[in-house]
Figure 1 (tube, rainbow over the protein chains, first blue to last red):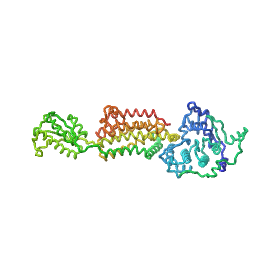
Figure 2 (figure 1 turned 135 degrees about the vertical axis):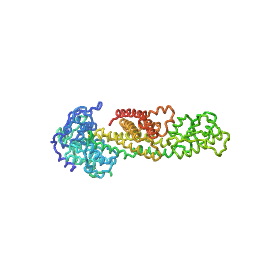
Figure 3 (figure 1 turned 90 degrees about the horizontal axis):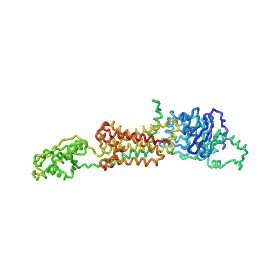
Figure 4 (figure 1 turned 180 degrees about the vertical axis):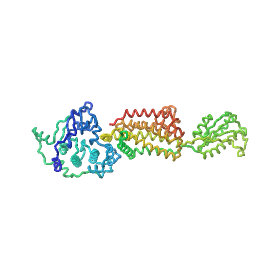
Amino acid sequence: MTQDAAATSSRRAPTGAPIVVVRDLRKRYGSLQAVDGVSFEIAEGEVFGILGPNGAGKTTTLEMIEGMRPIDSGSAIVDGIDVQEDPRGVKARIGIQLQASSFFDELHLVELLELFGHLYDRQVDAAALLADVELTEKARAQVRTLSGGQKQRFSIASALVNEPRVLFLDEPTTGLDPQARHHLWGLVRQIRERGHTVVLTTHYMEEAEELCDRVAIMDRGVIVALDTPQRLVDALLGRGFTKVRVERLANLEDVFLDLTGHDLREEG
Amino acid sequence: MRPFGIRLGMFWALFVASVLMFVRNRAAVFFSLFLPLIIMLIFGVLNFEGATTIQLGIVDEARNAASADLIDGLAAFDYIEPTSGSRDAELADLEDGDLDFVLVIPDGFNRQPGVESKLVAYASTADPAQAQVGQGLLQQAVGTALFATAGGGNPPGGAFAPPVTFELVKSRDLGYIDFLVPGIVGMTVMQLGLFGVAFGFVHLKRTGALRRLFATPTSPAYFLGAQVASRLIICAVQVAILLGIGIWFGLQMFGDYASLAVIVLLAAIIFLAVGFSIAGWAKNEDQAAPVANLISLPMMFLSGVFFPRDAMPDFLASITQFMPLTYVNEALRAVVNDGAGLASLGPELLGMGVWAIITFVLAVRLFKWE
């Protein structure tokens, strides 16, 4: 945990101007009110987490902000642009990693990145993007031949072709083994160091603690808490909470990583 | 460059991607290019024509005992396949290449020696070498038939004037390859539209690749435009390959390529619209497959791709004449086999136009991105 903890301490406080402003977002599917009045602001340069169990409305909230899903009511403004008025203007300024992202099977990674570059009307340095996500050797491979972690990293590379003001990651580590997850965390920190704002959803609390400056906890379509991870924990303790078991100095994941190493295990 | 506000770079990138995706998809290439080629080669090699018989049209203007005897005598030769009819009908068949000769038995024909020389046969110019052999065979057959019916008046092998004078009629000799290739071209355009679009598109829809595409600022119009443009280019290449191989196999092209291109383009529009209708409606490949087959299989066998529709029972022919591929095949054959121009293809172009409108409206109605 030491290397992760060191990175955590270097977190900036959310002092920048808001780059994402969400006001009273709502979305209904039939009888289900999936998102029921969600409001928050995200500061520039911040890593903002949306946490919650499956079905809490995280992905729907994200997709409404991204312009991928129509908004029933409320508003979302990204980098000064109202997504309902100009969804393509928003899409041009953001990068999106979809939860189940798939690409054209017959094209290799460089071709895909160049194609995506053209969709933003810009030339891309595919080799540099692949180097950033450590997929240089896979430049001529097709996406279907990649491992789960490699796929997620490529998906992030594809979301970075337009040097986005805000990068949206929807459950980026779901389904990955611990090594691949830690590797991806490192990548997210690098992206943040370069000044990109990152919004991610997750249902791994550890991931949120590792990466996020602030987290919004969602349940049944509403935000039930929004603050820095530390202050949320402090508030809980302040309410007199004590853990039943004594805090262990290591957990099973530490054992797993100690025995199997931090190195990535990826085929090919 | 943005002429008329169109982002050419974006369109070009999507177009190239679309072509690459097709060319690298082995199943798509196999079903839309190699399968028609293989079918063409198999049918081309089999060659259903009987080359050794003489297709003889007989015009009996005498209608007497002598002419009836001559016709019976000719029918007795197993290398002669006689048909009979009016002078105009038989000559029209000769010009179309359906007959090798037309023998006219003139009014007042009788079996008196010397009279038989008034027999006139019209010969096809389509295949000079074969016509030469045919003329000899026909002279011999008529002579023998006359000798037999004349009751031995002239000794066989004796010096008698050839009984028939020949006149050459400019005509086409159409082989099975001439029939087959336009049909295969029509079928290939249909397969490309139906299968080349529907399956690829449904796959992109189901896997979420399409959704990923629309997480960028591109618009669906660019994607659809690139898909259509790439399929039209691929279609042109396929038709060129099929025609080239057809011509190598002896296909004769009597029409002009511009008319052919217009018909192929109309056909491509119809079947691409059908393909996009299926692609837009289906949620996955399992839904798309039966519908695509249900549409393509009847047309493949009932729209005259491999066999002439004349052979069908009347009720079937009267239904299948309205199928889109029937219009396409008939128009293609009119151009390739008869040298018809677009001006003389009114009914076929009307039929294709109506189908193009129907399928386009259907595609717009059924199309869904997700």
